[in-house]
Length: 470
Image 1 (cartoon, rainbow, N blue to C red):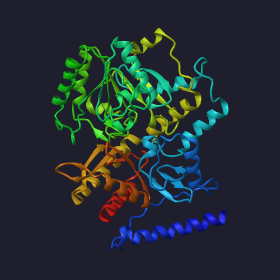
Image 2 (cartoon, rainbow, N blue to C red):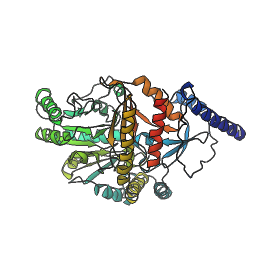
Image 3 (tube, rainbow, N blue to C red):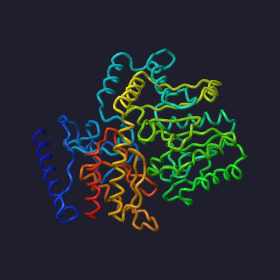
Image 4 (cartoon, helix red, strand yellow):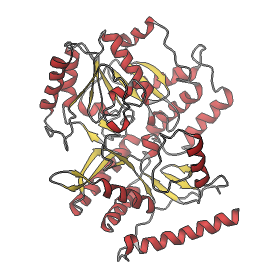
């Protein structure tokens, strides 16, 4: 078996070299870019191979599960910003486990915190005292502005948004929620109502939820005019509700929707409208929090606002099942009317890991790093946009970047088929990116926050090479 794997690995290496020469069926005068050097050797993999795993998935797991690529990857190991497949091939991870690995795969500080706590106590729930959840809540609250000082721990972003919506309705004594078109806030029965992308919604009752025009500077009907977008919110309240609402929720940079940053000044205008209608304002920081945007620690700070409730997950735990809702003492009090409990939320292992994440982000100055590397990446992508007509838009902040592909810049026609081809080519070149937007024509570039300028250059060079070969 070991000899077979070595032979397979060597044959794949030669195949990749040959494919680089005959990229898209013809020889190229420009050679394919190479991954930056990385001083790490993955362990030999002796587990089941991709075909066997795929067979088991199809037989024993739900049919709604999907996978990337025509021939799915079997990822068996990760180290910082890189992933390794069953053959030991290294890939640059530009999607971070769907924007979840913040500090880097298998970061030693986080691994150590998780392992040491696991040796002592894995689970007991909050019916007993334990220092880990209290220490972590204190540290997380210290990162929040204003009076956002009370923390509820959950296990995912969906759970966090469910709890935030419950808080908003209880506190306001109203039912109507307002969300943005093109938003994604989760896939549970409740948060599906907040989500506004048909690919993620089932035909079930959506509840009292109103979706307003998305303030998208690239595709939005009002361009970057925040005042006109805010007026649409007011119109919905005036004509679509009793005049009173429970709350408003928005991602500052829409994730699944294709890395869409809201029009400047939008949230400040809308928060004022919503609060006058009796509602609370919720910032979904599941993807944009913890310094990823570079310019600020929280995405909502880019809009100059302080929400009433903030939800977070994904990067909060660097891969641990962890989420949180942070709010004011006044709003938090409404949940004390009944018993509110989460079996796994804030368990000792996840709390220890989450605290380690905060310490790593501070120690390694990852927010400043995201600002520096992100600016470099965006500048290079915008230069590439001038070269290739298929790149309709480059947008984002820090290491939360979107590249939208179109067949016609004037009409902004989504280049769905072309994006699918480029997606496969980037994988062939050793780069794993995400896809987003309603039509799947946006590359989502949201790597682990240890991603370097050399990685950024390799990614852009590979994208240039892939587009040039089409």
